Image (cartoon, rainbow, N blue to C red; front, top):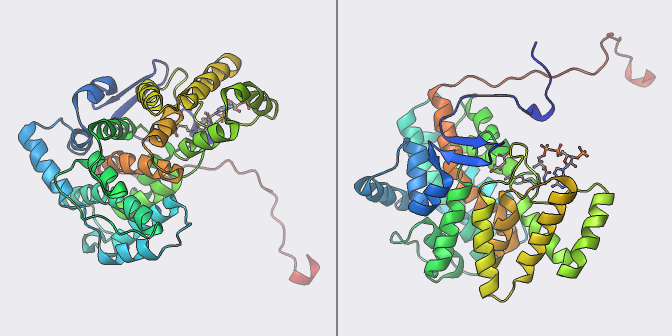
Length: 376
Ligand SMILES: CC(=O)SCCNC(=O)CCNC(=O)[C@H](O)C(C)(C)COP(=O)(O)OP(=O)(O)OC[C@H]1O[C@@H](n2cnc3c(N)ncnc32)[C@H](O)[C@@H]1OP(=O)(O)O
Ligand SMILES: O=C([O-])CC(=O)C(=O)O
């Protein structure tokens, strides 16, 4: 039997041509394109196309794909009703997870059975288009507001921000979110993607796989860390208090959110992009203290513990600066990662085998008779 690896560290679980996470080099590429080049030259819809179709679109292909994606934005009435009546103080990740699961109830194509890639590609696109509308709808309804009319003339980043505020956002805000979505789109065999692949490999359905993934992303060791970063910055409150805060954390062996990574042992290549936006946005807002505190935390923890910032560290300040409520940071991660999850599910379906690892059994090996209940 193979060796035991706690947390499956270093274990190769499947093959994928989608994203290449090079931990030692601190490099990330999607289908052979470096993320720096993709950020520079592409919009998020091109990334969706790249992940789903395996190539970058030309203009005509992009136009057609955008039209298809944007036509999928409306939610079934039953899902809207759920979002309207969900408890206003519910965790938006729980609401998003439940709403995505509900989408499956209204999609007759979703039945479990033999994989049909054409059908599943159409469902994938629909899920990617609908998650931003789910997140924005819940946010509007919990404030007692209506959702502005769905539009088809705005790209994914612009449309989400428009639904949230009711106003078409600035070019700067659109570009910032567009880059964040691109950077979060896919990332090898991260925990939530693994969940999605485990679920679909039983030949379950796309909605079930994405529901599993959302539940997995929520945790603070994964996508939930971005919310933890802002809570930490707010708790510290001031640059002068960073050192004392970190000393306490180090002494108590507590984790700092947004630092460390299972694969990257150098800086996460997504972090510098987000840091750049965080610096610009906080300076413009006259709130540079957030980025100064972040820099101090990152430098100190690098010197003291050899830890580096991961994608969640600066994305938190970026979203905060865009005026997005903290409890929507992880749902925004889900909005972006939906493109990677669905692409990975389609890839799994093309050449699938059930995931069924072993456990290292540590219980009794001597079998005992079951005593009657009154003698236990
Ligand atoms: C999108 C993403 O999912 S990126 C990751 C987002 N998650 C976070 O930012 C949460 C904070 N970070 C962490 O918890 C971890 O770095 C993980 C879960 C991301 C990766 O961790 P693993 O590879 O499992 O490493 P593990 O948690 O075993 O930590 C190894 C050592 O580094 C320490 N360490 C790792 N990350 C941190 C951190 N953020 N703060 C302080 N210490 C840390 C651990 O305490 C442990 O120390 P020890 O050996 O003295 O016990
Ligand atoms: O790859 C991981 O383990 C976590 C991560 O950075 C991501 O999902 O983006």
